Image 1 (cartoon, rainbow, N blue to C red):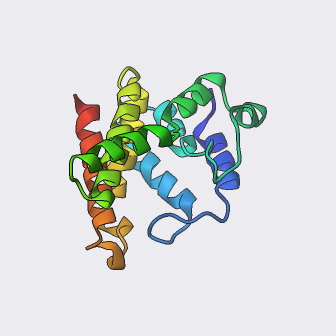
Image 2: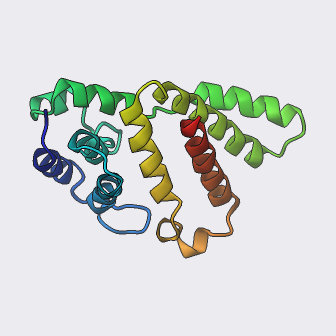
Length: 174
């Protein structure tokens, strides 16, 4: 299994130069997620997944094979793949058009469609207890004041994003 120290080194290299929503180094946010899970008594494997969960994204340019070549265990890579959300834009477009046809304003329809699509993704995680713990920890931290920029607090976009996160956390509990 990939150790916490190995995961931290890999995640630090992959996320070098990236910033979190509060403007700090992204790796610090990932370490915070892992720390919350450690405080909750979760084993090292869960903390490792928390550190590495955002390593296979468009912003990192990394793939499943890249992680395997870096020495990340196949079991951990499979969990990272499971936790990686790839937006289903055709679904979002179709659903938001349906809502707009029902009279819902375009911006609200788009945000509602994004939430529904995200919750469909969240449903795919429910069968894996580690994925549920890691995603719930990440979403909970994203709802903290620190990660809501002062100039975004009143924006409709932010309100919908926070609602989406809360809905996802509730869905993960059920």
